[in-house]
Length: 464
Image 1 (cartoon, one colour):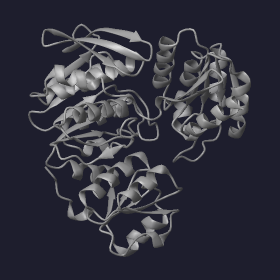
Image 2: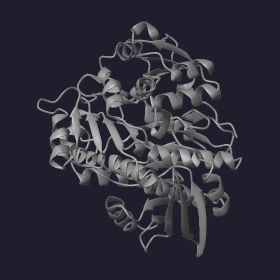
Image 3: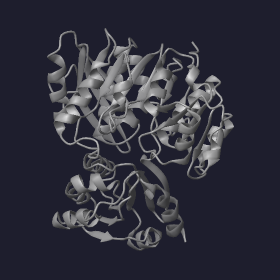
């Protein structure tokens, strides 16, 4: 089936079109036949991929980038009110559409799976996209990262299923009407938008309220915040809830997770029968993401054994424990982890996959607000590494906060017994790591900012 293009989306202009979420929507619209345009701060592979689909991509933000005949301007919460293209849109009376509303319009008329949670969204959404594609169901999908296989974060499929990552950071996930909603975990994050766990839970409750009648909530039976949300949801009549995890009470119960080097073998008890399948990335948290994907697919009526086999075809997402290369006997791996829970999970996964290796981390904190609230926990997580280099905070959309620096993390890491080297000059990292690393070591570039750019540079230094 080929859904039409909403009138407002026929000639959209995206401000920040190269972003992970924005580019996915733009790609799908271009594939559906819309006349897509937009701007981004710098050239990128994503900009080129959009041009290949027929989109017009300007580099740099300027009022003249916005065509007079644009049907709407699409923005994310990161776009500031004084952006010249946004100002120009107001002068031309061009409607401004939030990214989440644009995505919601693309899901219309399709069987939507929305994947939510403080972390794990990209991986779980990707697992579903790969598995459904493997089963020839030709899904549409919009993901916050590029799949290692297809190499893209979004596509328009001819099938009836649409899989989307649902972002809780600005409450925009409340715009969707999924047939199946997945909640992987519920933790306090995005401190600029949420003041307490109560606010987080209220936001997730509003998300689950949008599940269509007869739909299903798939939710963790292990994580405390998810368990609390389950209790709240079940108080309302008619909620169809499927829990998954290692807890004895789970509807889809994980019987065993067996590490196999950089893969895992997972056995679940589902419908009174044991089912075993392979997850081609290391770590317990990725195995549990795969089980969530399995439960969601089954909720849509897909046979469990078919889906389990197809999940084994997933080979990863860029920046999620992605091997960047090896030089001088040292493997360099890229991790998107930027929340303490994610950092701990990825470091434990690498310990399990390579127990005898030394683990060296280059960590770039992401956001002043997150560092202010969770800097101590970030430092404690770094104690799981053998040694770490900690960079300055990557601000992204935020302005500096007085007194909030990487020192909060460094002090906590040292208090936990960690070997930490502060380094403000990012260009010095490759040389510093090359001097520290020995054959057999693993180097993780870790964080949600531009620390990812350092992986190839470290490999070059190691090779020289």
